[in-house]
Amino acid sequence: MRVLEEDLFPSTPGKVKIERAGAMNRQLHRCFASTSTMFLWALFLVAMTASYLSFQSFVDTSSKYFAASWGGLHWERQIRASAAPRRPPGSAAGAGMSVLVTGAAGFVGTHCSLALRKRGDGVVGVDNFNAYYDPSLKKARKALLASHGVFVVEGDINDGRLLAKLFDVVPFTHVLHLAAQAGVRYAMENPASYVHSNIAGLVTLLEACKDADPQPAIVWASSSSVYGLNDKVPFSERDRTDQPASLYAATKKAGEEITHTYNHIYGLSITGLRFFTVYGPWGRPDMAYFSFTRNILQGKPITVYRGKDHVDLARDFTYIDDIVKGCLGSLDTAGKSTGTGGKKRGPAPYRIFNLGNTSPVTVPNLVSILEKHLRVKAKKHVVEMPGNGDVPFTHANISLAREQLGYKPSTNLDVGLKKFVKWYLSYYGYTRGSKNSRQ
Image 1 (cartoon, helix red, strand yellow):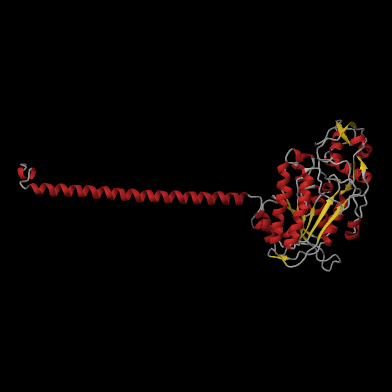
Image 2: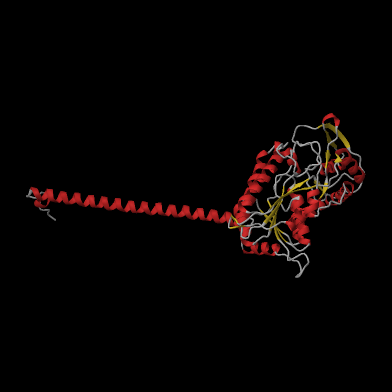
């Protein structure tokens, strides 16, 4: 096939320019079309990435929610069932309370929860099961509560969302606030834990109570440690408490000031209880009587501290059943909170009571009583008391609690320690004359 020359070389020079311009336009059009397509694809990819990240964030949040140890319809039914009072209609004691107990798997919390349930009050517990001492003991207390129909939520009082949910599910009439970081000496090792639990946690709880409708009446555990370096005995609620000897004592004193503020501003009914050296079955392993028992049975020496000038330390040991009576008496006599929607409508009660035994016993005498009930002689190592925040003695004046609560302790140290030893030997699986146990 012959190709014409004019097809290859047109005779009109302008024709070449026009065709070249057309070709360039077509190239530019393709280029812009390609760029626009790429831009659209880029926008699409960006949108898909953003959607994926948003979905992933939703999934993560949902996973955290569903992985939480609380929430859901079944959980809410458990809360309502546990919180429902069970006193018989027309009971002389009234319709019954619905009480939120913080630190419910703790020593005092367990005993108070059981006593409330036994008399027909509704009880829901909250506890974070921290590892300050053996969590298995707390789990065993939780199982004991469950066997009596008391549901304990595993959660922290610093979790405002959890507390708000609890008050949304149940209109609690009372709060018994016993959750705290305990122990005087441990504050030197982990001071932040005391601020976290005893101050921040208290404020979070008070905020939830302030916003609740209706507002509950609050009874909470302060401590005899607030008397600090006070040397006037017996300790009275009117004595000065501005010389704390430990960080633990300082956080409890701060708690008294904070609760007074919430009472004054928001109309919360608040009762603070200054416990004096509580002991008994299901007690705390960090307490002296508990660790003495363990070491005596295991044939290990015990360290007995002595004060200045070789003076024996003394404590106003108070048996757990007496403390429980004081706690329930405080709940029963607590006036109503007067706030609504976080606004105070009138003055509300603010009270502080000592709960002690009024009969201080020296530490050497405590050891002698344990030796008698354990039938084992202790290997004592007596040393001077270090400057770790402990005080040489405690002694409660309980006249105010006796007058307003009908509080009357009835268990002396000998009887109380006998009951504790019986529980200890049973719980840890000791047999007489044997050093083997579950500990």
